[in-house]
Length: 172
Image (cartoon, rainbow, N blue to C red; front, top):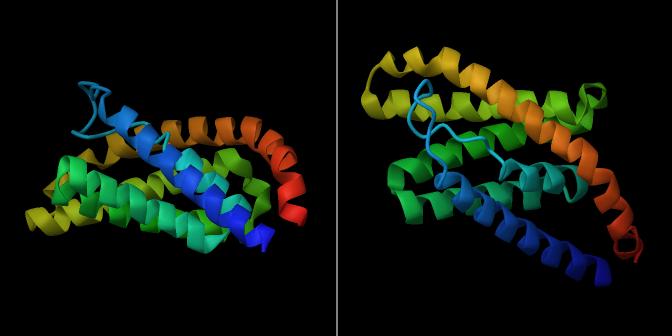
């Protein structure tokens, strides 16, 4: 029973962290050379931790929570783009964490960030009704890869300490 309570509480805390980081990211101005709305993706740290430690349901739950927050604070289009990008990147992240540990957190961070951008571009193309949004693809891929590498580096540095700190809770 304690393990289940721990998982629920940790999922809630990670969700709150993801929403807080998402809000802080929304305050950052977009660089002039990037497409509108391009952000570093720091809230994906919570997703990566949830995916690696808690599994699919909490990780997808956090992605949906972040999308709901985006919809409430930035509108339905932002929410839909966040949802599609978040679900796609979380699915890829979970698959890579399960199947290919050789990539490490940096490689998984890069691939999942690029997948997030691709998911968002698919929604944008569907909303616009044509493929003109693909003009943003090179910039988004470069920025997504850099942001994903940074997220992966932070995860690689922080997760071992978090695993140790939570080990006693996970064993019960």
